[in-house]
Image (cartoon, rainbow, N blue to C red; front, side, top):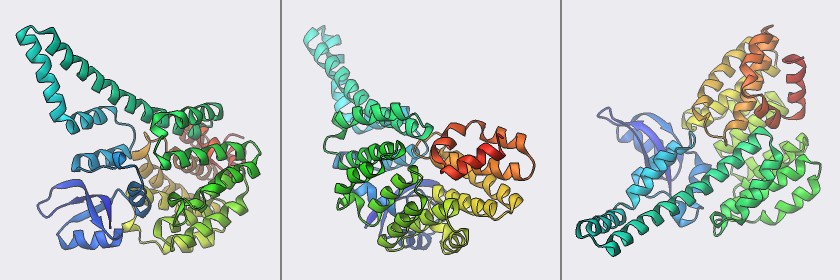
Length: 371
């Protein structure tokens, strides 16, 4: 059983975000519907729920407030909310320290006041240090999304040496794959693959996750045949899970057989996808339509995909998908003769699109949108 984040409306009409334990997304939907919930939207999918269980104990949300904060952070950074969560989880300690400082003021005792004040400041500095570690990773995601490779390399090295990486195998392995991606981009694919190979049997690479990350290394090296081969293996080793089925369909829509992509997309129960993945499925639909020559249909579907993805526009982890979405929307607009609109549509996301598209798609954008 895993905890899944979900937003739903209860029988009294109250809408809320909460966590529930279930064996699967399908199991959770059935339970919630029996309890009278409606308008069910999943924040989690099978992969994100599993990844949560693999975090260090201190990094797992426990309370309702912590789970709601995690749902909020999916949409992007929320510094004020993180401070509030830290205060809430340390409310007793902070009350004692504040009372100590207040007692010192009342009794005019420098010792009592100094002890309370110093410990309060120390607590705030510890929280600030933790938030700075999160901010560094956020900057890394931004650098990777925008194609600032020197900054990405420097941040990978800095984070890997930080206390945040100690005891956090999930973060350490992520940094290894990001190093590998930089190597692959610079033409050192074999070195990149050798770097990640020791992670093949890691618990974090189970159920197709290792193959999925290796696929991304091939993708940035513009080796699309190997990229698709890895995506197929990832799907198979996941037990044909719906999230991995969508990942494979999205890959095929971009650089593979759009007929196969369409067949996979039709086999997905979309109401059980997370809110983010529903937008990705729409994006895959739109790319298939664009590549098949149905420019108006593509334009409409891609507009809906961009609208759905815009809720995540403050989260740099989602920026590569947004770059791909707006680039394909621009290509569809250009195919309709609306080149000026295409350029306007892509302007904000061009750097991200350049860093995130495959080579063929990048050349299409340069020729048909900006050429």
